[in-house]
Image (cartoon, rainbow, N blue to C red; front, side):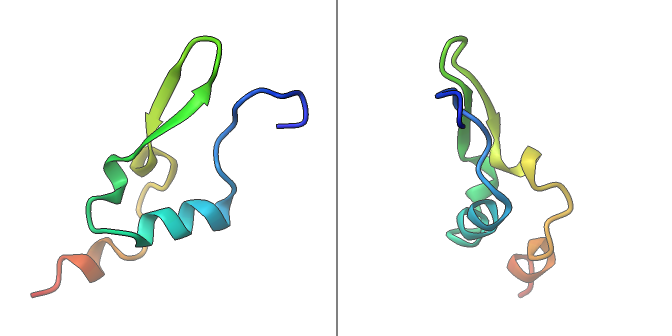
Length: 57
């Protein structure tokens, strides 16, 4: 971020990371350097379009 703090990845980066693997939604994303707060990538991408793609048999 411009102030030197951590921030969530942009939409394009979220999309890229979600496409890496069917379990990418479990990637921890650092949101705050000071408090070490993290969130799961899946929480940043609810209802992601390929959930149904990865669940096809």
